[in-house]
Image (cartoon, rainbow, N blue to C red; front, side, top):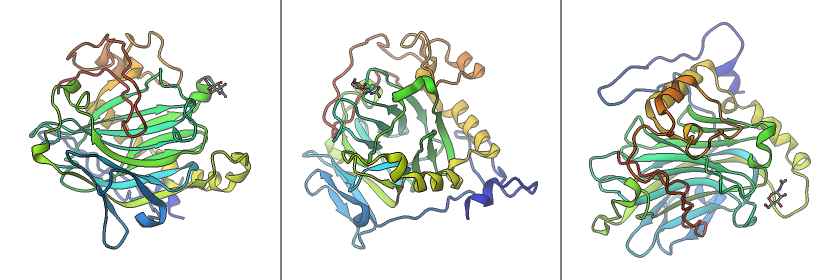
Length: 352
Ligand SMILES: *[C@@H]1O[C@H](CO)[C@@H](O)[C@H](O)[C@H]1NC(C)=O
């Protein structure tokens, strides 16, 4: 099995961090011999159109898809089934050049079934004005806990518009890991205190592109400019490696998904090797610019899953962010729109 290749207990180091050097602008987080062994599925085998008539464009071979945003509509697709736990992944290329106001979201959710008690795990990519890089954030919600945003925001160590990169969400009964390529960028280990805030019900995988002019770029300062439309996000090499389970059937997941859970927990991507952990630490040191865990204005006591790293705490001081750029204290929660209009989870006004 592939997994063993990378984390075996043998003393031979089959897995080394070859390349970790500072470039003028970016830090390379390269892992040797790292590619996960994944079963990709053709778009048509696992996904359906969600919204945006005409703006979901399947590749001629049915394996990949593009999502377009134009002046009439954004677009999205959704996995045809719900999954209890899984590894959800795609290689994605984001729109280039002027992309201010655009949000490309890649996430799991069950808000379609559990309106008030939904679970959700997010990657949200936020466009920028020309010459400035994309940003992104991750977030999670459990059982409708939308009043507790758990956002982290980051820059990327590469240009996501130039090439495809793999973005993945691992969700098991014990752990959530967000990956970019093979670098874990965020890990949430379930703990008792978190309780139902840890996602627990079957979710679908979504991908959407939409106009988030009112918040995505510098807190809404820069809007989508349709002179540059259509904006195109590309998705390929999709992975839906989970236990398909109907969320409203009363089949106990623990029974229905026992085998899949065991399988997931034995996979390579379930293990953060020392090398991966080191890459994760470097990523977070250099590319994370906001974390709710250090935002004592919002959370005087950090939520229970937070692992406080002293050097990070020092860096963020008491704001959770590196720079102030606006009305941080504004507590008004913008409304969660439909699942199409992705939730706005922070009043982040950062202008970077
Ligand atoms: C989930 O949230 C609902 C609505 O707030 C609540 O009634 C329910 O008890 C919660 N579930 C658990 C297991 O705490």
